[in-house]
Image (cartoon, rainbow, N blue to C red; front, side):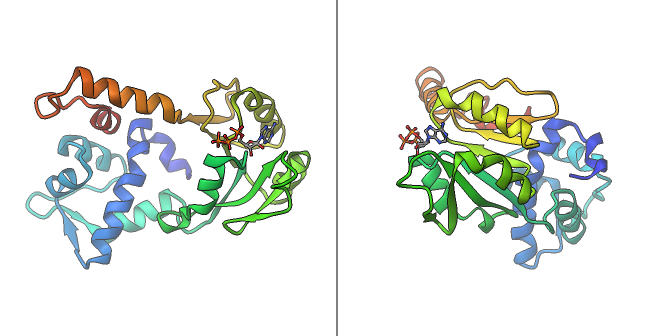
Length: 227
Ligand code: ATP
């Protein structure tokens, strides 16, 4: 992302892809302007938060007019580097890893898993969802040759830290960690942790203890977006 986004608070930055997806749909349907109330309804973020977010990047809506869809679209495209394809490596071609390789991330944004690694000889040398699978021994060389700076980790938890240390050495800047392992990384590397089992458990907990969603709008989905 560009320097200008450094000034945007992290909570705002997190919502940008969500706004972008919705603005793309609006643009595709020929709409030229949108109010913060309409946006709020669609993306489930309260309109005061939307107005504050948009003020950070200079999109000042006019009363009774709203925001210019074309302006917003070009801002998001530039800010989210949508004109540039980001290549991603995946390590661990198990059930989850295979699903990601078959899932076409390009449908919704400009990221693409272009290379995968495993240690299972039955998988090495194959193509899964058009993505070649290499031996883990080739990790550093291939990542540096392909200028890859983002990795998805879907290996068993005990293997996660060692592989992470190697990714640090290979100059990877971001890891999407699907393993339950909590990773130790230098400050220069950003880790986003998604533990599907914990998320599911947390959802079940909320359903059990806060069954009345209507009365209690502090469900995690809303919390995440409005934090
Ligand atoms: P999942 O957890 O995705 O459901 P799974 O149950 O099929 O996968 P796991 O044992 O979790 O299998 O392993 C995930 C993948 O990681 C497998 O393809 C396995 O060969 C691979 N793997 C295991 N150890 C390593 C390692 N040290 N480096 C790279 N890949 C590894």
